[in-house]
Image (cartoon, rainbow, N blue to C red; front, side, top):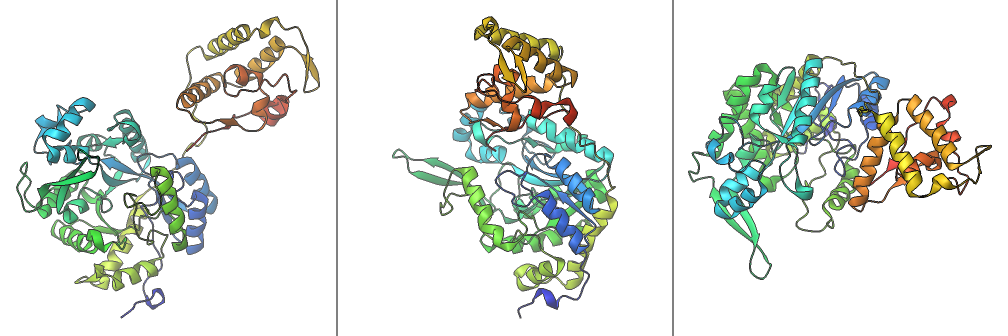
Amino acid sequence: MNYKPEDYKGSAEFCHLHNHTVFSTLDGVATPEQYAEQCYERGYPAMSATEHGHMASVPDMYLAFRNYGVKYIPGCEIYFNDYEYGSNCENLQNRQKFVNNEGKIRQLRSEDPYLYERYARNRHLTILAKNEVGFENLLKLTTQAHNDQYGAGRTKFPRIGFERLCEFKEGLIILSGCLNGPVAHELRLKQIKSYGKDEDGNKTEKVVWNSDEDHWGEVGRFKAAARWVKEFKREFGEDYFIELQMPGLPEIHDAEAFRKLIALADHYNVKTVLANDCHYLNREDFMLQKIMMAVAQEKTIDDPDLFHVNSDEQYMKTRPELWSMFKNGEYSDGIGNTEFETMCDNTLLIADRCEELSIDTSPKTPEIEDAPAKLKKIVAQKLVELGLHKIDRKFLIDGKEVGYKEQATIELKRFIDKGFASYFLITRDLVQYGKKQGWPFSPRGSAGGSLVCYLLGIHVIDPMLWGLSFDRFLSPSRGGYMLDVRMPG
């Protein structure tokens, strides 16, 4: 029988708890405003944004959902290493040799491919902040994860382990994660392969672990998954949930994992929660998201090595649409409608458990010690370096005749009086770093009319020679200014 959404007779209420916006760069398609509008129109009580490894969407999500009167739940899909930390690790002494040592890691790859694959991999874990303490702890976790990244070059990941997570667990709700989570991954993992190249440069693969074998003390996939459920249940209690997803990927045994997750949840008395891992609003946005991921990986959309969820099911489904997916797929084999209703109602339970937070979204510019003096010094040195301090010529700028030193003095006073000395020093550092990487930059609007920005190297056109306006953008009557510098990503 083909079940259609209109056949569903249950409640329409739902809360999407695992979602990606455009802030999950080149992975999420929908904007915070679009999600907020959809929640408002559908009558949903709340929603979270769980970007990959960071919380950059917090200000936009908070403001968008506040405008629509819908509760916003801060969250993050963190990168979680399920080998490096915790009592689940059978070889704590081994990981000490390789933490933050890329040379040793490369050595490990050749000496013990299995151990390397376990150490190098990054599982996904969904974390939500249920109150202000949880929000602060999640910020601490994501910040520390970026300070302790694993990998090299473009493949670095800001990850954390179980010990660090437990250290800042207060106020957090943990969902067990997607199919790449520490629990679900064990339930669908049949073998681990090591990849390399032969003498001719052709790709090779070698099976270094099978689920039927004993290796490093791990006995069976189901037992490994069960250990993680017990660990999280012990630490987080009623704030730990088994996350269920239906991405429509039979080739990676998603329905089998779905049913086994429910069996684990029943056995260990852990509540289940249904998530859709939304990356876009509508089904037809799937191809756009696939193109974005291809751009991020510098591959074509038909490249067999493109890492992508090859399914168009990660759109913002309604509860009736989720029900039809559940009924029409193998997910419901042996599982009744009551279980489905419970896993949906538990999204509302979490939404109710999470407090509505008041988040300060004002700019948080770090303060540099003696920033005004440092800014003046750099500008003065650059004037001398370019020989501009000797030029007596006057230029007509914003209706006034000024020289280089005079215009620099005017702008510096404005920057410093408005408290932006640190801001411009930081912007200069970012631009200098980007230029070393070969990134193109382009300042927008009247920022290009600033002599100080030119002397700082933020842009490359001398605004004095072209009579570019500084006052129009930075006039005190306009309440200050912000410099908008465009760069890739």
